[in-house]
Image (cartoon, rainbow, N blue to C red; front, top):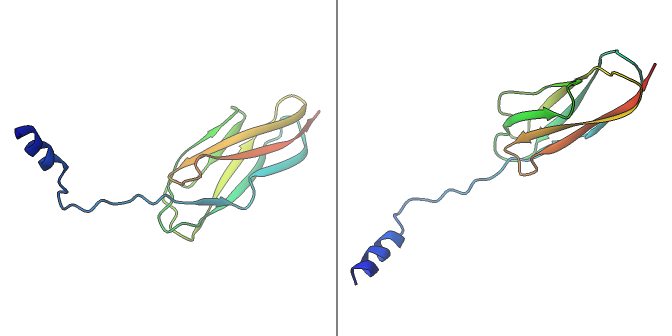
Amino acid sequence: MILAIIFAGACKNSGKKIETVIPAQMDFKETTFNFGAIPNGSEQKCSFEFQNTSKVPLVISTVIESCGCTISKWPKKPIRPGKSGIIEIKYKPAGAGLFRKSISVFSNAKNSPVHLYIKGEIIL
């Protein structure tokens, strides 16, 4: 009987409001950038524009590149609902031939991680 009373007390609603976490939504205009034919060793730049289409702030926690030849720069402050941001990519090719590199964007968005791609052909 004592266990039943303790259990009932533990299960009783404490009167606190339970909050539902609403994730952000990150929508990119494009997720692939094609550099085309580029010379070996020449630094290339591109950017990926996105918008926070949710009703909560979007926070990018990190961006991970698949290769040391790729460097990314992203907004460190939260992106307010309805606002846009840009992820900038620098790529320094080495070697020759076709390439395809990925950039993974981690955030509080329900579609996280988002995978971005750069591709092209390195010519000598």
